[in-house]
Image 1: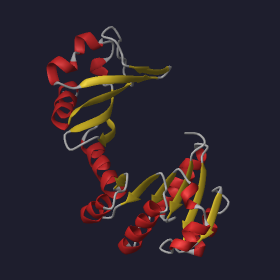
Image 2 (image 1 turned 180 degrees about the horizontal axis):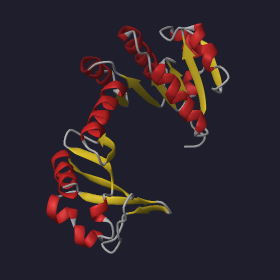
Image 3 (image 1 turned 45 degrees about the vertical axis):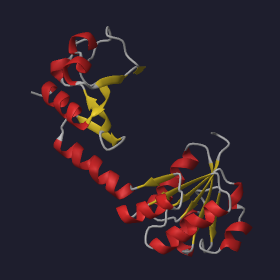
Length: 220
């Protein structure tokens, strides 16, 4: 993956944040936006940043977008431009196309035209923040599907010194602890003999209901 190149179209809040993080991770990023000010703001941070109209096929062709491994359509204020740009990236042969959706309907249209992944940053962030607000031990929450979730839960004082064998969340609640993040490092696929300490972080996978039951049982 380290040699992968990304083209990010739309340098608003989501596109610029994504672009900067990819550069921090060591990838080459071409940023495209029709707003000259947005491009100017990012020009020193990205590998390349250009002012261009992404709905013009010849412009995208001249920029060599077909040579990029992944194209992300992060246009946030024009559904028509988002859809047209996505179609052009697919037609030009970009290996993987990811697109930001502003609504469920927009997302369904993007899926119909064959994007590899649709992302809903505002919706997903709202869901994650809501769960964090109502669950005191929940550090992060990612919905894997309609039914399954992966959550990070901080270990409360009552579980300090308790082994996974004694806790046995799979038998009691149906969810599984797939990792434990300790101050000295992360334990992937922990064994029954691993012991929790206060302030460790448990990475738990299961249905929403199973994780809610598990969390409720350890915070009583």
